Length: 166
Image (cartoon, rainbow, N blue to C red; front, top):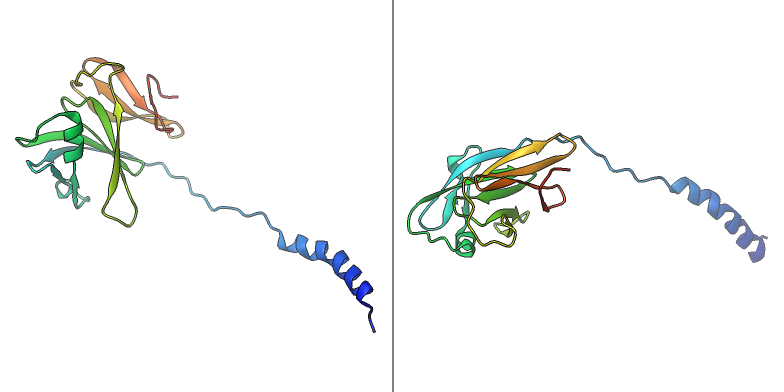
């Protein structure tokens, strides 16, 4: 008959050996992804919505009334804005905008969060000739904002506006 003491010592000695076989480094599977951006002119209806169906293969609508209200731009007539889908987010600028707007969809819902990136430092003047483009290499890409009334700005991969693309 095996004594409890001998059984306890056997378990203590075997535990590290059996545990070492269970411990494996957990590796995440990764893929290389170089996303190409989609820039488009978007028509804003009088009700403040953008029908995405005008830009195949996109479908749906985006309600941008909150953005126009924050910009102080009335929706009395149809307008056009420039949009760019960049790493899963929609960015918008338009004539007279003071900010670049980031629209981030919430997965599995019909809701999106939005936030501004002010384009003029310490000034409350609307931008003119705002244009969006992708800038930089595949390893270090930025969203470039060109404007008629100033040097280009860059939205970095860290979500900050800068005067250059790192």
